[in-house]
Amino acid sequence: MIRTVPAFSRIGEENAFAVLARATALARAGADIVNLGIGQPDFATPPHVVEAAIQALRDGHHGYTPATGILPLREAIAADLESRTGAGVDPERVMVVPGGKVTMFMAILMFGEPGAEILHPDPGFPIYRSMIEFTGATPIPIPIREENGFAFSAAETLSLITPRTRLIIVNSPANPTGGVTPRAEVEALVAGLAAHPDVAILSDEIYGAMTYDGEEHVSLLTFPEIRDRLIHLDGASKTYAMTGWRLGWSVWPDGLYEAARKLAVNSFSCVNAATQYAGIAALAGPQDCVAEMMAAFDRRRRLVVEGLNALPGVSCITPKGAFYAFPNIRDTGWRAKPLASALLEKAHVATIGGPDFGLTGEGYLRLSYAASEPAIETALERMGRFLREERPGA
Ligand code: PLP
Figure 1 (cartoon, rainbow, N blue to C red):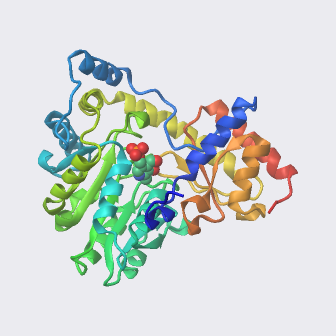
Figure 2 (cartoon, helix red, strand yellow):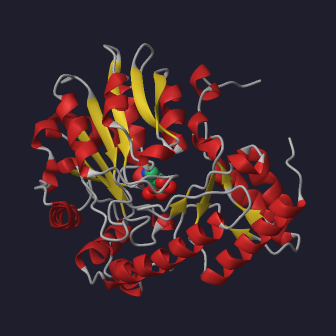
């Protein structure tokens, strides 16, 4: 039998896609599924953004672009980052990539090798761990705790650094918890990193524009003392409801930009040209579409949290960012994955079990509130009925 190199036995994936496939199969067979599993906005991409892509195709933008992305898009990215975070960004250090994931793929490839350790949030986006294991490096989970409001702890993160640590991954606002790390904690992390000048940092800020109640998003870009080893991960997927366009971007330090550019040349060549023009329209155009989407997410967030806290055995702290709730389900007597699976099969509500985001996720479910308010109400009603009627299963 034809075989790959052994690294492919270590590569993982995202269970959210498996849940989506199962939910779709059940729906095709006639079930009325409420999908709170998948992490993508249920809104259409704003019309002016779609129009910009169509116009770009009509204008003949059909060829390759520079591997790092077209300059006007990189300028729009730098301007957006500057206006949102206050940090100065040189467009010559911005890379346009096909989705947020590609930045983590590149960064982990640059630092992962057998013997190296890479710290990653747990629970956290599953691709971090998967890619770390693919490279042969050792994944070191940074526990993300409910008692800290699902913020990362600077002290705990710093305590996990060893002479083998090459890269630290942080994510705020966070998937799967909706946690936002407060300024004091971010500052403490940056201060502590001064003692570890050889450790690189990947800051996944793809939900950076998605916080509630005026909660501050503190970008690591605003700390000049770590800019020479900071990789900033960002993109349009979430903020502009553009998951299927595949448009992400990153800011790289001088020493790594060339490596990232070469990885682009060796793999995707460039992001789809029309998509890049859509990106300019998204970033430089009117932003009321983002405000409207966030207002809708905020209403749903309140509905979800209130509804979850009324369910037997369930408690849920109020998420401060992204569009996920991460309820604690320990008192239901269920383990998380069997509960997620039973909820899908029997109550027709798709959620994701916390352990799909790392071992610290046991005892929790992730609900993505990227669904209409009536759909959320139906889901909560079904979950309540299920928890009252069904005994915990294996
Ligand atoms: N980072 C985090 C924390 C995410 O939740 C996601 C998507 O769910 C990504 C990155 C990847 O985004 P994209 O779809 O743009 O690759």
